[in-house]
Image 1: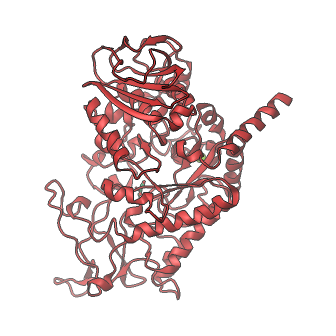
Image 2: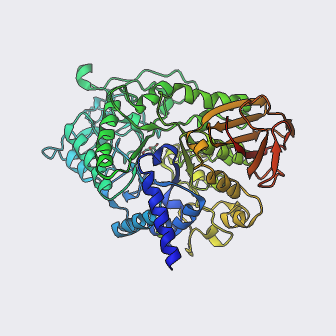
Image 3: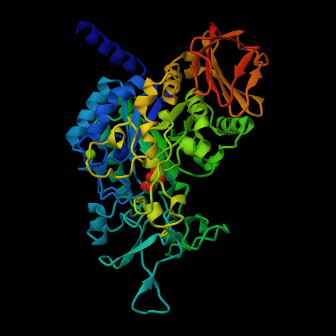
Length: 581
Ligand code: GLC
Ligand code: MG
């Protein structure tokens, strides 16, 4: 008993010691609450399910969890359509369950980061209902516009302009209550807020304060670059049509049909992010724990890095989606080096890098790149400088599940109206339930009915329990790599990426005065014998600390830098024993 108490104190003390800089090297584990763990047998994951699995995440070594939206919502877009930002969705639990989750997480030294969805609310939001009714003070909370006359039918109108939703078709929906159209850059149930209205800015700051007061450690900010649309006052009182993009693959009602010069990446966006940073810093000043803010914008690199801040203002950590967008299943070591070096080159000096291997909107690493690249991609994300993001299930190399048209629920897929090609747009396959073990529903749920999305059929062999029991597995490799993330060389060492051959990339992290670490990934079907003497600062002898599923090496085995064998698809992590350089 005494020993246990001491241990808990030690954990708490070490967390406190790093409160100021915890975020700079954090491993943030994304939980999609609907699909993580169902505690009450309704086939839907929930907060108590997450709480139940916190010890798993702690022993894995995660620093923080980011929860996709847990708020009251009709779930048209599974929680990204929020009715009330400060209430919990009943199917996920209660505020008491949330407080309990926070307390347990804190006791285990795991920080909690929430999803913040500023671009739009849900159409059941009180703000939206009031705005539709033109209730005093709420008139301008959303983007409203008159329709244009329909030349063929005087009794009706057409949408204000040609803008298209990210989920296909017109971005405008008519409100009979108001007699005007509202803008929705995503689903019809997701009306865009109007950030030119000062009250909206204040309301949304209060949302941040509400959760910060509850002790969260920061936010992931949703769809940030959609936040502003042009001001109609600058365009003769109307929202102007967007020009065509020229994309020949896009149909007229596809998002990519237009060039979104009036609806995304507007300059005004950045200042709002910097204002939120100031707000978060007020809390940091008070309690000494830095609050992380990560922003989601799928956009050009130069626009993305502006979120980091300016000479005079601090900003966010913009998600680095280059692993998702620029590394393909046939990318070689040179391609990967360029992707890594590019971010490091464009990132402003002194800022924190980050590496995203997946999320709830993207096909999984194993499906995108092949299961034989899971260890390599996890190794890179965990070994490179800065924040690493792991989407639930990537630590075991889960594959996208199979979801039929009948089972499809993702609005982006449903909106295709296409029972044959819907899967090209569907995010359901990467949201199938976490595969805990080989029992019914993969241990995700005890329901006697269906789970909200089907469990992937491979769960009997591909599951956490099996990987924990196996001598080698993606899980064991991931955990071994994560275990060295706290070493000074991984936290603060210099980064060197070296292409040894077309298929072999070596990533070293060396810090004078400390043992260094070296990651090696072989992306090909062939075995290579490497001589790393060209990497001058590496000592002659190194020890294996993590050995991927396709490597014969054992942990603690010694290697000489002039003679290293890497088998096909092997991902290896070595540690130097001698202090570096
Ligand atoms: C973000 C979310 C995505 C959601 C969209 C609208 O891209 O990650 O899941 O559908 O925003 O909120
Ligand atoms: Mg449930």
